[in-house]
Image (cartoon, rainbow, N blue to C red; front, side):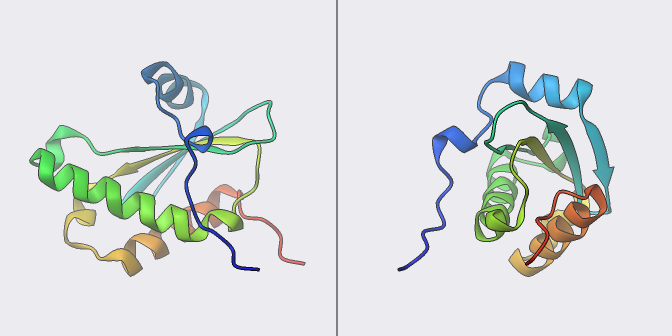
Length: 120
């Protein structure tokens, strides 16, 4: 059977209110490229949101960064625990990064935040 790596709508944070609750009540972890906000939720699902502030540049550039973050998360989503809300925020050094660097930064922060699944 082939695994499908999709990012379903139920697994995304879409509303501003959801983002704000994660920013306010969640715990943050940061490195040079990313900031990761983690907030435990009461459901069995994991939801994720992606952000890139206006300081990073034009809309085209910010959208590219969010696409990179989405792809890095999508390819590794089975490695994360369920029951958390995540927000990934891009930082300035991410502008010149490729997918491999984004993925490495994401996985490093996830290990730091202890939201990686234990491999059996």
